[in-house]
Amino acid sequence: MQRSRIIAVVNQKGGVGKTTSAVNLAACFAASERRTLLVDLDPQGNSSSAYGVVNPTRQIYDALTGDSPIGETIQKTELDYLHVVPAGPDLVGAEIELVTTLNRESRLKRTLAEVRDDYELILIDCPPSLGLLTLNALTAADSILIPLQCEYYALEGLARLLETTELVRAELNPGLEVEGLILTMVDMRNNLSRQVEAEVRRHFGEKVYRTRIPRNVRLSEAPSHGKPILLYDIHSRGAVAYLKLTEEILRRIFGAAGVTPTESSPLQGELP
Figure 1 (cartoon, rainbow, N blue to C red):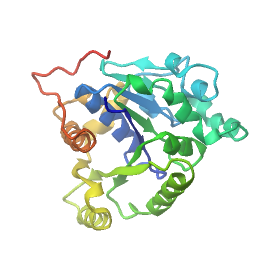
Figure 2 (cartoon, rainbow, N blue to C red):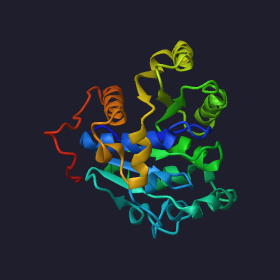
Figure 3 (cartoon, helix red, strand yellow):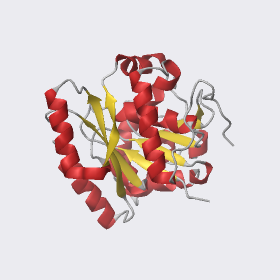
């Protein structure tokens, strides 16, 4: 049996589609009947609220500080193959509290070890910074997904993120690799989008997924309804793009595209 894969969705630059990608890829993985856990490691808690989880009684903070086993923080979603570990405002203080903790950069890794065998894919939505929480995610992960917005400053800060990844690989997690780069908020009518894409593909080659995530109003609306795009508008351009991206990612990880939902293939399944 193949070991589960832990993927950190990370970019310290805010507003690049990081949480949107984490939320919607998790839904697509689940719709493809892959047992999936989405871990919200961002104190803003947007991945949690995108699934209607607001003000949870137990959250990732409690698991990181040892106040609760991670199993007690896991929440069900409308997708039976998908569970969520929510975040809340208390997570803001976690970085300060963990500073004096032994092996502080490995707390998340040890926490996820308790449930890792229950899932095929674990996605971590990181905060928009390179602080201790993100360091925990990089230490726990097998690979990272990097969303990049197609704008002038797309590559700004990416060098620092890759340098941090190299340091983590050298000191804490030798198996860490770059899973891939996702081009987000793409408008191919815009010359700048095409120029940025060409530059990114020139630098990173096959690490850049072929599927582009377009600017899409329905993608922006879905979180306010507490739903991923698949459950909000499966026919939208945003949903179609994330389904195609899911096929690419699953093919790279598992060697096959897996099952993607259609009108005749329900989104619901059963999580063993």
